[in-house]
Length: 293
Picture 1: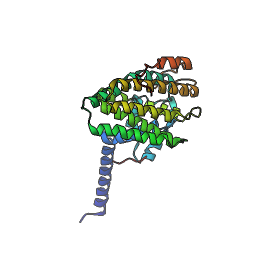
Picture 2 (picture 1 turned 135 degrees about the vertical axis):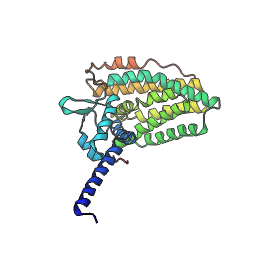
Picture 3 (picture 1 turned 120 degrees about the horizontal axis):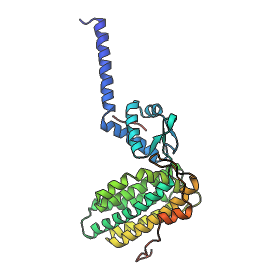
């Protein structure tokens, strides 16, 4: 018969085993990915504000995990430029950098136009899957419904931002170009943070409806298999969106902070930002928080 000491020793060993198992689970790639995704979502949708100090103990308690997966996830976010070291304050959410966003839109314009043209070409050639076409149309309908509900609070703006990301992701999928899809998915957290500002612009309440009207035209061209027009419409949309974004961000950010943690730079003036990000558009040939282990 086991003695009391034996039982206590066994209980102690069981406790150590539970701790080892828990530590093993929390250090597993899948678990860290869950924590990372949750923090990424919080930053992208503005739940964690730009410049906000990140306290690992608070995040661990909120998510119901230890600090170990939080630390791993923050390293991934730091590599993406979404959090940065803040000296003795530890880590903070990286402020939105208008200059970086302008440059991002310069690059994005070409990629979005190419993706739309490729998607239309695949529809025209009968290569595109019907499920991918329906996914694009469904994303458009969902976004248009969200845009019709204004005025928008933070929840409404977050819904619009998510709908925008899903719409463009559907185009990437339909394009069949995995390189464009991969390149753009890595930048969407930065785009979503900046879009949270422009979609809630009190000086222009027509931004959401204008964006989704343009999305409708792009979808129309893609589904019709018109690659040239799809590319032109995507280019026009990105140029207009970039101007709106630069105007809004420059108005609300007097000094830029690099996402890679570099030194602040001077914000380009509005005229420079518009001309740098947006060249005159080509004419269209037609008008018109818990974690599961």
